[in-house]
Amino acid sequence: NIPVGEWLCESCRPNLTANAQKYEASRSTMMRSHKQAQVSSFLKFPFKNPVDFWCKEIAEYAAVVYKTKGNFSLKEVNGMFTKENNFFQVGPISQSFKESTSNHWLLPSPPSSVELYVQAVTSVASALMFMNVERYSDNLIYSERAPREMNRSELDTVEEMSPRNLLIYKQFKRNTALGLIPPVKVEYDKAQGFVVEALEDIKDKTLLVEYAGAVTRIVDSGQTDSDSLMVLLETSSPKTSLIIDPSKSGNMARFLSGVNNSDHESKKKINVRTRRFSVNGECHVVLFACRRIKKGERLSYDYNAG
Image (cartoon, rainbow, N blue to C red; front, side):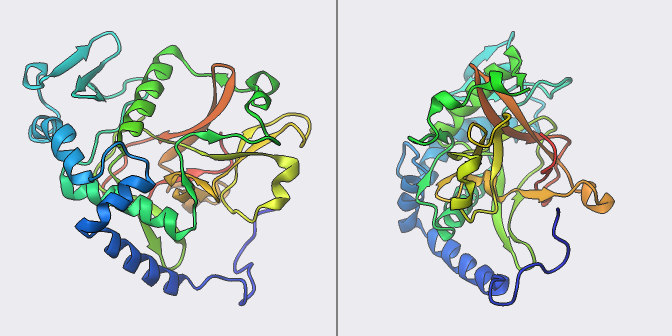
């Protein structure tokens, strides 16, 4: 059943206004130059300062792609282009060359300025630290009670990731490990809590994030009070069915807004799709844009889909 209206008592309901003020103060502090090393360290980036990374690795791409509004020739980019796979590489970063015309994903473009990049990564780190997340991770984290061997996609009816999307997915994971994130920021809404907003327009079919966190058996889910659990593997038994719990480890995926598709007005807000796929025999949950997302829009997905 989906709760309707105010379903928390006064003593349990969080003070969203106070939380918003605390988060904004925390994020403002983390935006200061002497705190940026802490942001990089928490997000496990392979560099000490986000400003240096953007200027060294992203500036060349931004100078060509954003200056020409995407109407650039490959000769203008000092990079390597793989025509068959429709992406090119600038320095260590891979990027999609054309808009998607089918169900093939696109790699997210980085924020177009160093200011937006710093705002994006700082907001993600600040929000996770505010929620007392102990470990940042873009991957699934297994345990003794829920080992990797339990994540067998053959036990579920999960679609195999297509060869083309698998290639994009691998490049995406490589980019995120380098420190690249989509042009989004995490905000705290006084009425809703944490939300994710687009800092710039995002193209349809852009791969945004993989839902990450601790893998837990459904039978053990009573041990967490997280409101951001995501189904990973559905079998015939709660002892072998798996969920993702991002309460102690995870990434920004937990902050995207879940929408109840039974409400017509709420359904209009959906601009992100969540899907489970089989990758090398294991289930993974990915979130990607299901239409063009305009600057300032909140990222929302149907939590009944996938």
